[in-house]
Length: 81
Image (cartoon, rainbow, N blue to C red; front, side):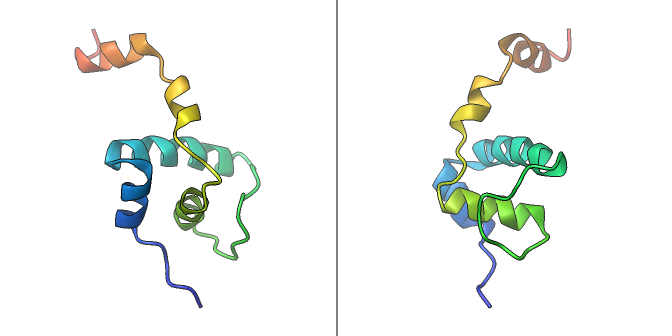
């Protein structure tokens, strides 16, 4: 049995914790909506699947960054005003 992928390894791969959080949020939403896994994994743990997909370069942050709405980011930084 292969050892689980460590979060620290994925953080280093994707470029930081913020990037990992954004990537996990987007991909988790897709998987919960019925998207197919992009890796051959018997795991039912979506987080481990996402980590494996990331480590195997099946997913990346680029598509997540494009979806960020600049106006909502500014509003969040200003306390929702």
